[in-house]
Image 1: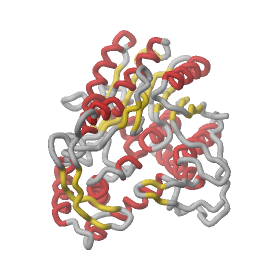
Image 2: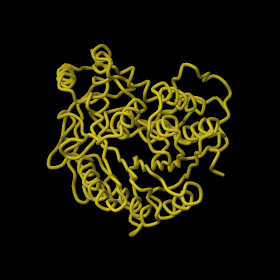
Image 3: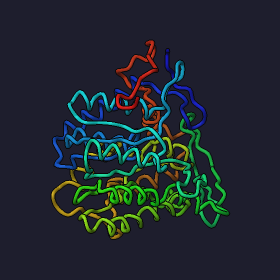
Length: 396
């Protein structure tokens, strides 16, 4: 079939397997170009199919020659209908890993469930024995609690008052005012249940109880802080409460891993175009201005540059892992530089529909968004008849 992008709001309903393969290959080439990393050799990535999770898996495999197991929840293709992008990313990753002689297997299912946890543990036990690194990179808007069966939904809302500020429709470039009503009822509790640290701790408890964590095993989850500009809707909103919980959970997990010499970290990463961030009002405008400044300063990074730097300059240097006063790894350090934030804040004040294409990098934002779904890669022929029925090697 001829696969073209079909948009509905902030979601693309199609994905291109050729573009996904290109995305994975480019990330692999980048990691290889930076040289070997003396990192973990047996790695579990929970949330392995897109974004930071995919880049973590690629960095482990092609930076450290690691055996990887990836867990994700993606939609396989059916005749005449494409898979979700993460399915094609994972298919391409496994193909490249196997070509390189690397162990790579994947599990497709709800990572919040007991069943997928058990399936994953069975696979580790059978094939790897133990893992020495667990990456936790889930980004789901809903979670069915494995104990209660209750379906919890996260919300993106400010806490304590209405929030109004600028935003942009990245499809049209129109800058407008957006107003978001504050959290009410169980909004905060539900968001923390979905996006906080409870499930991360459940994974680590289950792995430890089954003796599947190697001595000195490390686990890392991902978070975001961002500037004062986005604080009311992000870090001081419902999602911020969930991130606070996630970050507090790292200390609890570390306490629980003391007897095996293990450690849990939260890495605070930079703002990037993801399916989730595209739906958050204010963030697309902030990112398009941030991209402009960071590219001019020569410090712009995508997910693969972030993860390669996290591994090579923070996690696996052979020395103490550098953290901030709250125990977090800061790989958002370049984004949060004072000079960069001052320039972004100045541009924010004058951003309009008319001048955004000049003062911001809306084109870069759009390209990154389409790249998420395998589109807008220059080496892919999008007019060619393409087989949508691509499988992931290890998933039968």
